[in-house]
Length: 369
Length: 129
Image (cartoon, rainbow over all chains, first blue to last red; front, side, top):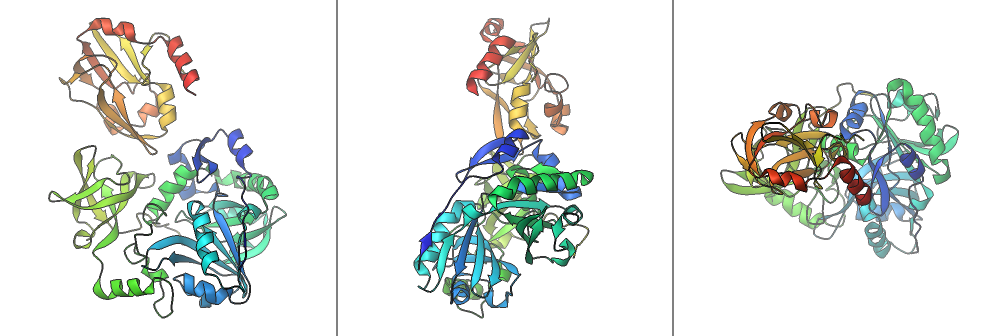
């Protein structure tokens, strides 16, 4: 086993500054929170398209004979069903079934895989894998070798078509292709974190500006907007997608988080014992969505109450641009988790009415390929 | 960014407009609304309630964050701008006009002497940056 580590800042930083982005530090990176307003940006993705710099995300490459078998053991989804050019959402769990990270796993070849990990977990996951990998498998932090740009929205395919090869319509959801965007080499992945159709491009950092500019130019006719982490958070909450550190932690299991479809019980993996027990005996708390009656935003850690008792806590909350409602997610006692059930959220010492909603809050109306 | 000369300001980013009848109108500054981003919720006191200088009188919430509103003066709330409770986006669009927040009858008019002029407030923001 060998470990190499590389690290650098987002190569699109100068573009963000030139666009007048409001910046904040996130996981060691200066990231754009918003350019012209979170709501405008979130709506651009729902109605047309938006472009995100997500170069802060980490990439870990696993190479060598036994990489597949090793990944099968340390992740919950079925790696064996991946073929070259396919990727999957999966979880890395600890011994008691808690979530170490949620990741996208790409199969580049039978002996070469790429994991896209959360920025805040990059070093932790790297160490976790390196400590457990057999000597035949090289675990490498290749984050410095990639800028990651996400083009999201129902118009994403139209924007990419004139400047992307292979034809974007040939790349189906959760597939990827090593192709070109604006003449630059890219891993083009039909994935995203917004609940809309979209593509993510892993490009050489020195090509990032050129690819960004070309996509902005092609997107003009669809009213493309640069989008910051603020809009990204709104969109992922609307889509009911969990965020590591909020919905997902080392103390929450995939079952509690409603992610059981990404956990394959017909194989062996780290954390399986606890998860098996949870499936057999049931869980006491579960992740739910809820909608506020008023415009007040439920924020992380606010208590969720029912009949004067605390039944859970908020993990994420925001203003839904598309539903024009304050929405949130949180873990609550399973007995109260029925859609439509009334709950209250304690906000600054006062109780505000809300009701349980089925996730996601938003589904795109027009299904693409 | 806009800082009308005829208004007074606080370091908590509220503005104050003196009226003729021992009352003042209070709102938040252009700088405040810009820092907050899209405002989606506002909480204001009831008419007839009292406010105290430097004490919170309400809450303004954007997609990003929630902030207390601090009263620049002590007195009684004689009017509340209910329209912005339904349309909080007005705070982003017209912070010195449509999005005024409360009108206060002054208990201690001498408190107005403690407020900043437009120029002083602008300098204060520059230092803060």
